Image 1: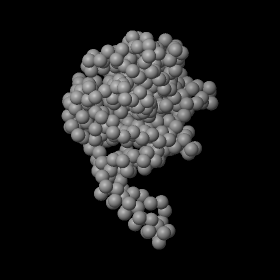
Image 2 (image 1 turned 120 degrees about the horizontal axis):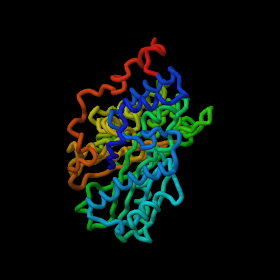
Image 3 (image 1 turned 90 degrees about the vertical axis):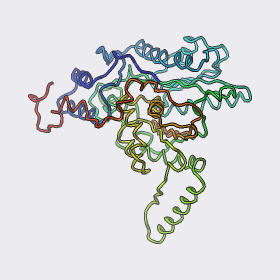
Image 4 (image 1 turned 180 degrees about the vertical axis):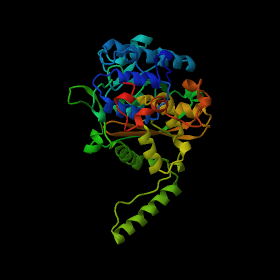
Length: 425
């Protein structure tokens, strides 16, 4: 996982200063945006692209995005190779996923060139896949590895996002949440089918399932890049997002659960379903609702840190404990929503806390625009004691309380009666 430079830290005070310099916004928009920021669950130590911190959020050039990507690649790839003892030339398959920046030559070619990979490396570049892209990338890598079987294959997956050109400076309230949630980050992981690497592997991929609910209008449009009425581009996020996430998750679980749940739990679900269907016919009830115990087949839930609403919806719908979603909440607090790479920060939190033991099964779940839900099950196969990007702060998590740094500094935003004289703008 990448830990961006400290001089890219976006504090509450700086975030509000950036909002303040937007001359398009009036007091109602300021209050709404700052209130939105205060409820995102983000802390005071997330990271932003340099052009935003330099006051050029509406003047981003391609160079800003390139620099953002290079900083991420250099922060993730060399360290990963050094820790594993592999060289760039040992990589047979490369998959890079960045949703919102797709220059030519592509970013995968840039990685090949920057680190001196072989001429026959199979390089793939994924764009437009949203926050669920990292497991799409893992699936692409897995399929490429299978195609080369039985020859041993090493695959490198690099997941990040470019925020430099995507700051929304308009007044459409459905498009303001993105800039409050998304922050800089990235990760690189190595996959191998070489038996010689088994003893050094941390985890083994057991299952991977991909689902999309793009046939639903609400699901398809709940996260969408578009222009507002003033022609300013941004990403709109609708109130239908939590519902869309649950529907996509349910579709995904229909295929995943029979592969991971023990026979007794499957039998219980079948009996429960039959009973509810019988009651439904007798009493003309609505749609049946099954109580699924996800923890019957896995030991840990590695949930995409997409936002408080989605985390709460999954927790409530599946009867999870707060400890189950704690890694996602803490990742959101410390790093923000880093898009596709967020689940690797969540997994790293579990590792840094010493929660992962050999033989444990981890359900990794990602959500993304489209609407997509991708999941996989990892089995812990080796030593999981690396604190990674959490090394300098893991002992402070979870905090005893998480008061919003924004509310502490800007308490006036909750005063509905506040007028222009009572605000700092």
